[in-house]
Image (cartoon, rainbow, N blue to C red; front, side, top):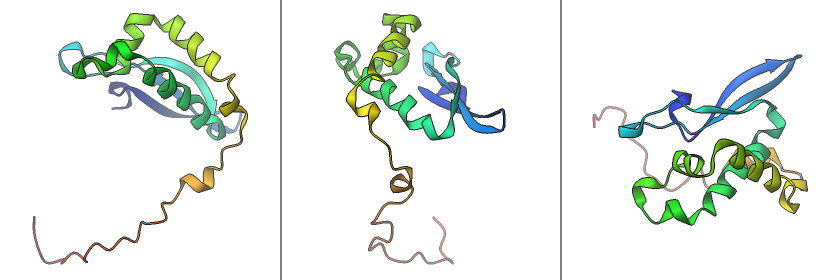
Length: 126
């Protein structure tokens, strides 16, 4: 299932280090394709820093934003080519944002998870 998404992560272990293989460009519909490798191995602590550039580069691509059916990373990579896309990601990783430390613990929980939603009756069926 991971290979059908715009961005996917496959858990990996390399030299006793937990990490991920990052894949991009998957898709279903009439233009179905399996995702292609972007990074063969990224340590788990660096996962977010290696995924954020994908979103940053994609979000700057106005060509795909003009047609709602083309708002997929697949179309961006098809237009740019995988090598150019990787080059843009590497350039993005040189930005000031990438030099900042990410507090991973702050991403684990949302403050309002205990919202005001009423309790669910366990005897009811949808």
